[in-house]
Each structure stands twice: as C-alpha cells, then as structure tokens.
Length: 335
Image (cartoon, rainbow, N blue to C red; front, top):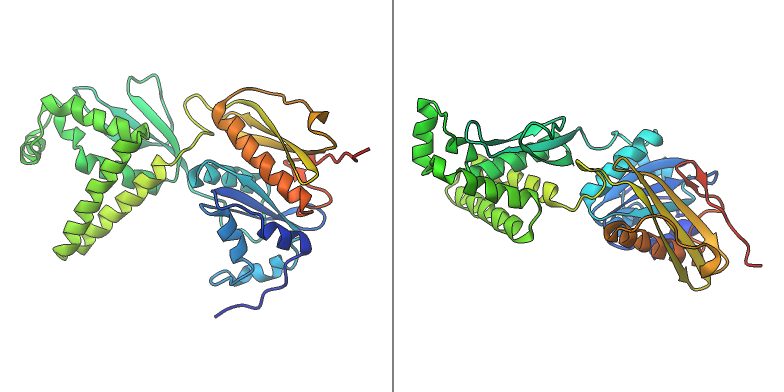
C-alpha cells in the first residue's frame, strides 16, 4: 500500500534531478542544518528518489520527510566504502529515524599459507606481525564469513597442510588435495582478496555453477548456501579505500565550476576515516588554491564530489547553511 507523501522542499526537488547513480551516502537535513537521517546506497540517485515515490516498508519515515529541507550527498567508490562512512556518520549524528546504527562489526581475513596450519579465517582484530597475510577490514561478520566459506569450498587450503589428522587426510584424499597444492590454493585465494578482476570473476562464476547444479538437483539448501557465498564475495571484492593495514591519511582537494557556481571540496582522511569534508563556495576558480596531498584515488573522488556540489550549488539545491562534521559551509559573495 502506497503511503501519502509530503511534497519535497524546493531544494530537495532540485537535488533529485541532479543526483547521480554511483554509490554514496546521503544525509537528510532540516532547515536549521541538523542531520535527521543518514543512509547509503549502491545507487545514490535511485535510493533518494525512492522517498518521493513510495516508502513501502518504511512508513515511519513519512513524518521525517516533511521536515527535510535539503539533501547532502557524498559520493564513494563503492557501497562497501559508503557503509564505512555511513557507520561513522551514524555515530556522529544519531537520529530517531535510523532504525540501526549501520553495519555490524569490522572484521579482517587472515590467510595462512604455512605448511603447519594453512587456512583462511575471519578475525575481529588484525595482527600483521603474526606471519600470516591480512586483508580488510570489511564491514559485516556474516558476508565476510560467507565469502571465506566460498573461497575454501573452491580452494580447500585447510586440507593441504602437513599436520592433518586421520579424518582430515581422508577428506583431503576425497577432494584430491595434497600438500603440494598448498601454495597454489593459497595463491588463488590471495588473488581474489587482492581484488584482481579476473580472479574475482572466475571464482564467482564457479560458485554460480555450483549453485545452479545444486538447484537442478533439488538441493535447495546447498544452492542457497552457494548464493550467500556469492553475495559475500561480491561484498568483500568491492573497492574500499578508507581503511586498511595502512589506513588512508591526508587532505585531498578539488575545485569545480558549473553555471556560475564555483565550489571547493577538501576530503580530510584520518586513520582510515573521512574525518571532515569541507565544502566552500568561491567567487572565482583561483580564489582558493588546491591544497593537500596527492593520491589518484582520493583526488579523483574529491573531484567527483566537487563537481556534484557545484551543480547542486548552481541549482540552489543546497541549504543556506550546511554543516560538514562541525565545520560550517563558508559562503563568499562574488564581489
């Protein structure tokens, strides 16, 4: 049943026509600038526009929509990266309308290719000095666990160790695995965890074949398990540049001009988190020199955000005051 929705505020209506489809986070703000809702999506435009079409299973958001004065978007490299930012924002801006506090725990994958006890495990804390290889972090224990299960199903590294019990040796024999396969199996897993496109595609394709074969044999539980592993692999394979063993750090800036509006954006990363996003309206392109560090991924993302904010500013689709994690949007008159 469709719920009667209030007409969007003028700035929101203008923003809906300009929001792009890439992944990102969106903050809905009321007239005074306070964040009243935080969300993320793989399709930023589609998700935000859905609020003006049909709330479906979200009727509790109807009173909130009447209070929204503008939308503040932040473009990200992937939904997984957006999930990190959403989680941080929900800690900074707890709202009555968000039912959850974002994704669950932050976890890591530990790949051990040693002869004694090779394997792939999900861990809550990284210990990079323990001799194993660490990948992540990833948001969500369950999708990460599913991804690890899928990788071990295709590449049974646990059964390629030197110290197997009798039962494990029988299982290894039935799987056609021996100690000579250990480094090869670990290599396949490593390439997937490094997000090498061919390795990811090949692994997901094999799991899809496993799923389809199980479904044809009416083994629906096995097919469902394989589908969960596929979803998990898609999740951990998405670009995620915020956190890591060496977390992102620095200030990355960009400037953009659109239809008379000039906007500068600085993404300030601290400890693998987007600590601040400064957005400044300028009179001229050379009014505010580019500052900060150079990194292709983050300068490109800063440029994409600057381009979007310039278009929103030109369309008067942002509020009279906008707050960037405690930093007020500074407006300069074109004099």
